[in-house]
Length: 86
Image (cartoon, rainbow, N blue to C red; front, side, top):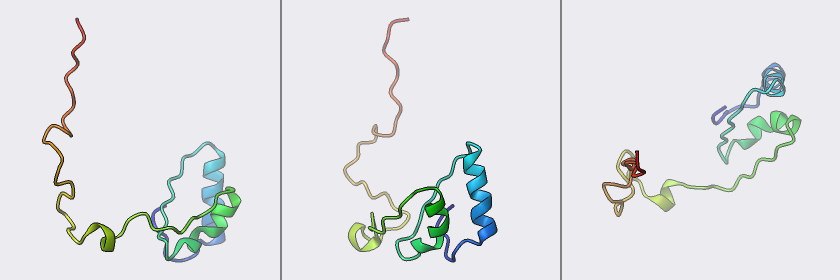
């Protein structure tokens, strides 16, 4: 569930809770300004929402779509070749 903007309907929260209880996996990503939208579900799952902002454009710049890591080497994202004996 990514950034709900309005509170979940009771039927939506019920459905997600049943899915989770049947060993389903949930990813919940909330916007700091609208985190209360999932409060009913979080309470049911004994989770707590911390509204601390982790990153924003004011801190990390406005360069959307550009590589933000100016100092990364070209090999940083290249998988290493195994070097063990065959």
